[in-house]
Image (tube, rainbow, N blue to C red; front, side, top):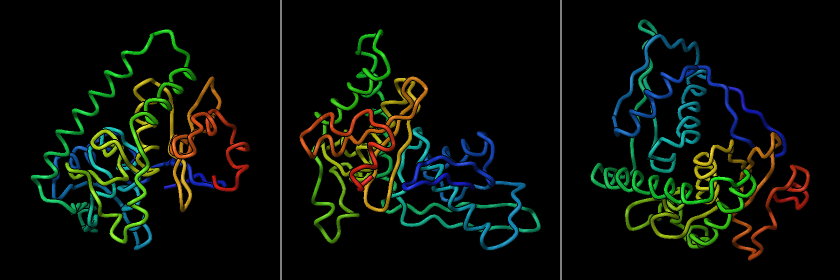
Length: 249
């Protein structure tokens, strides 16, 4: 797996151990079905570093696929086993929550996905991409408040909405109207994809935001800070240099 990196991390990946959509789809389907084991055949892993790389690809696929109903924060751990003689890799997801909560979250996620699709389809058909992104920015700001309790609470990483969504997930905003930067960025990405706009999550150790392709050029957006600074267009449609100028992105 190769990660393109500059001053920040952009989630662009080339998958080595799960190179085809068939394999990636199988992984996402297994995760969505809450399977305890997902087997892949004809996978060649030579050493410990390649085992670790294969596991990292699993996390990257989960993070990158909008059709995956669960986020990496939903797992207590994801382990694996490997048969060298059979070249069989078995991925073993272990969720933090029990199956009853996971089933509620799956149903809610489907509902929220449909709700977002209806929102996007309600907009005028002749909008330009940047006008669509402006509507996405305004929708998220109107929908969400930043949930500072996640940062202020020692147990913040484990706080969830009433339906069990962690506040790092885009579903938390749809479920309860609050989340942290990963939730804002995830919802922005999902809505851009519904509009047919190429979009990625960008992050550093402290924060997450987005870049989207506008007229063939990558432009940068931070809906979280547009919301928390009460300046809805401060971090909107910026070049990489403009976004990085504050030293925080």
